Length: 122
Image 1: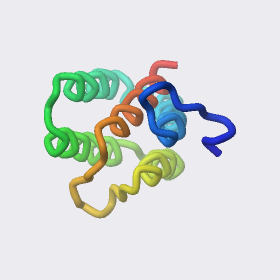
Image 2: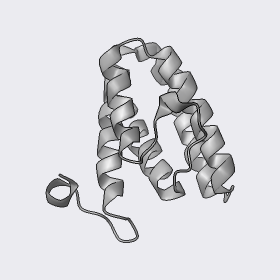
Image 3: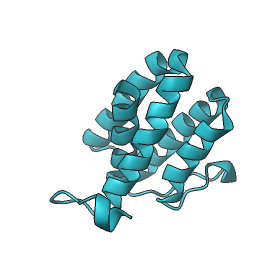
Image 4: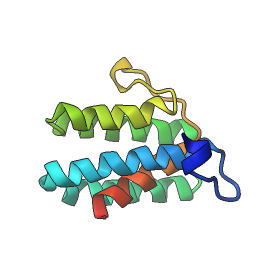
């Protein structure tokens, strides 16, 4: 799908636009169905992006990302929203229910966080 509908920008892999699009949908669903979460999730997503930009290592960012995901999935009640979040994560080969700390490359975490944030604020 990403080959035909999502084009990578310079410096991106082909999967980043697809991941960002799936995260955008998840963020939009959270906004539509859990408006109380938006006020808390927006600065958290921005903080994650700032952490990535600050040059913090991949392991620390992945640990922070896991903590954020665990909290988000705990707060979201509707199954279809959890499925949308997990669909985005599946594109980066991460199962949030595994309990493992992810080993996701930073550009992909950035694409997930950016897409989610854009969906929250759309």
